[in-house]
Image (cartoon, rainbow, N blue to C red; front, side, top):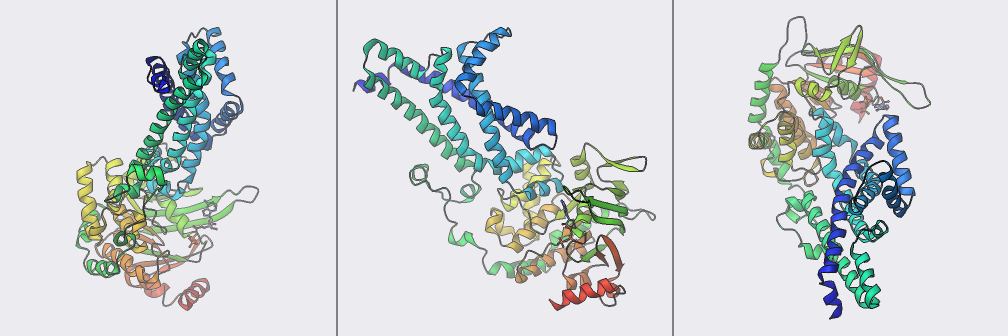
Length: 537
Ligand SMILES: Nc1ncnc2c1ncn2[C@@H]1O[C@H](COP(=O)(O)OP(=O)(O)OP(=O)(O)O)[C@@H](O)[C@H]1O
């Protein structure tokens, strides 16, 4: 009874309030500074990463008690007078930032790099990519750590008594000094701490629930209480949601019979494409690319590649693994930097300015990518894992092109219908088959109304029975006049759909021409050998 009296006394409750205020302000500022430090540590700039490393090393390596005393003594000497409360807030924030920097960095590193590459290909800048794509995914790993940090800090505020902050433990000690009733008073204080930390645990579950993409998309999720008690993070997918229905493939093929919406969009965009008689739509001149490898000679990947693509043309690039096909595609939309030569799309370099003979990357690279309107589809789909099919498609129109959310959703729905996936708008990528994911990825690229589509081995990661549904969508795009460059091993597709086939080997174009020439009567021994090998499989 006495415990309850102490626990509800204004004196102790007020002490708890002070502890909560210090924790709240210090945690928020510590996390903001921690994010900045984490980004600095991950930057390529050695000064930024060195400064961040040094800060983390010092702050993690010294006791917080000493840090508090230092701030309490040092700041007044520099003419900065702070109350004990603000001394504690600053001390805890600076200390937390060092720990937060490391767990935030861990969270950011846990997000697959391809997610950022896909965002860049859609024209998103670094800030939008961090805010919309990387941080929300990293947050799943970071949230439990934030909760841990908050609980430790709340309990650790008792250390602030060293700089005369009159918080909960300090107040409990003051009462004990007058009545010597250790047991009752300290149990009352402990109860108050326990209540506050329990609330933080519930807050953590609430946030986890909000940011968990699976729980967000399920119609029924377990209660907060059962998740707290059982520790269950994510329910198993419901039977009907877990795997694509067998009928889906058939449904997709039916839809692919015409792909009316896809064709309408592609032919609409094709009209936009500017090309003059002396300037093909894509021009690659003497393109060179090499990668610097630590302790080794630079690896020459592309060596003086010359290549053109005309408006409405479908070019298939074939070649052995490692011949530089994907690198060439990534250079075209400036996901990689050129080492020599130039690439022009619609007569303009994407994200470069010419200085003398050199092509120098400009600062506003993301804007240049967005303006060039080049859609890209990757071998591993690279849909944003935390977003539904619809959200994946609507993201770039809203974030990059400033479209309203409702218009973007409407376009996304039409595109999903167009690729035969209207029923799957609210499904996360993990609930879609590979073929479905790739069709969503094509729809995502089309949502920005691209004038040029780059496909990087779009069917290589698919089971054979799912290849057809993706090729059917691509075929419709080609028929509607979309300009396309397709890196592929699908000889049949190249023969039937491509206007021209380019064969690459060891970083150079060995042979190019109409499919009937390159595929049926290859002149070069290397092309003949490659085709024999592919056909044998
Ligand atoms: N970021 C990188 N750093 C270092 N080397 C790289 C990098 N990207 C590609 N390479 C190397 O460049 C060469 C060409 O790679 P690229 O992916 O363009 O080949 P590819 O013809 O598309 O092969 P695949 O069909 O296997 O995808 C390979 O030897 C690869 O290891």
